[in-house]
Amino acid sequence: MLKDFKDEINKCSKCGLCQSVCPVYKETGNDCAVSRGKFVMLDGVLKGDLKLNKNINKYLDLCLKCGKCKDFCPSSSDVCKIFETAKYEYTKNTIWGKIYFFLQSKLLRIKRLTPKLKTSGTLKLLYFRGCVNNLFQNRILEKIPDIEIIEKDFECCGVPFLSSGNLERFEELKQHNIKMADCEFDYILTDCASCESTLKEYIDAKFISLGELLVKQNMKFKFPKPIKVTFHKPCHLESDDFLKPLLANCENVEYIEMENYDDCCGFAGEFAIKNHKISMAISKKKAQNIINTGADFVITTCPACILGLNQGLMGKVKVMSLTDFISLAR
Image (cartoon, rainbow, N blue to C red):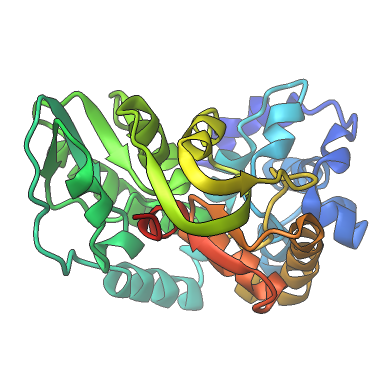
């Protein structure tokens, strides 16, 4: 319930630091686009001065869920969780909202379409593919020595449902995935930064990304010809410490760091649909930073970011997941 966050909302000192890091504010100049403005509105709702209506929900949708405001907030308010709760309370009480939540819950169900991977070794990895990677086979994992891939019938991590405020469906997915993780393993292996970030909210375990695993196992790769690459760090990627050691083990690969490599790509799922002009403007700024490096490829670890980078670049630079990029090597 939104009222449960009353004290956290009231902690906001209205300092405006969120303005300095919010990608949406930088494009719109609208104070309702940042946490401070949204907190003022939600405080009015809790006091009974405002109604939680479609106008306030429109401003709640003006959020990329990048988390930068939370990182800079002196009050350390859990911004995303507050906005998700407010969206849930508004949407669940509208006819369109009920229909949307129903359709979203029924249609966003992507089952694994590929055979189980054939691996054996002492390092036990519980593999969370994620929705997008359920459609494709990650053959790189079969080339890594001394690992055992454990595959269970995980469902979506839940991040699309959190973003839209569909908290009931998120809770269902959360409980299902917790049950799937009830087995023996050393790490949960993920291909997607957003999936890993979301799973960490409700599964108490050690996690390892594909990039971290390749470094841990000291994998070396040789590319057929010299190429230049740059890297986009997804907002939900906790650490990219694996990147430089991994690329150092890639023969014929030159890494060029782009300016503001950790800035948001501007996509964020349904944000790009509801706020397309703003999303495109943010993506184009990111695209220019990529183009300025002169790189042949930009790699990233989030499927949604791939969409965001592609909408800004429009084919000017090849965008690839880390998995697909490594697959180019011999």
